[in-house]
Length: 161
Image 1 (cartoon, rainbow, N blue to C red):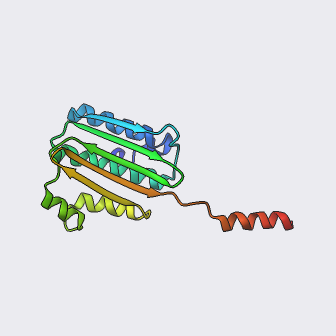
Image 2: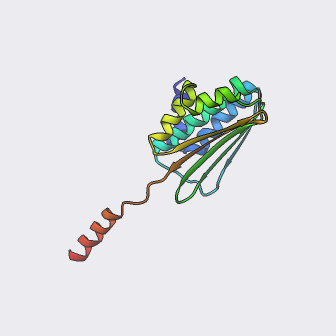
Image 3: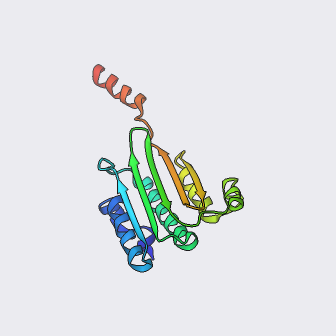
């Protein structure tokens, strides 16, 4: 159980390997086709953000398995200078409009609320698009720009020293 909450691979080799390990286990247990796409240049990020992304993928795939009736999921993870984008999409039955409205107004969905809170702790956002053809959940997490004041201070110390 603890391996699912915080797999050692996350620290040892990073998010990509931890996600591959988790997805392979789901494929074997649940007969779900899961495609994982991560940009080649993604690299390592902070331990805290890697854990949040891992947990977001876990919750999304759990929801797909429990609610969507989809046998397919697509996970896309990319990173640029502004931040990280995670998208998880299925081709299931979708979220009924009344339920989606409750979720978006934060009146329903314990798992969804937990995902939203995880992303918000990093000033990120979550968006859900759903219809009878499936659901796509997108998460954006900004990457903080380098602290220029610290760099400037270091340069001034070097210049005066």
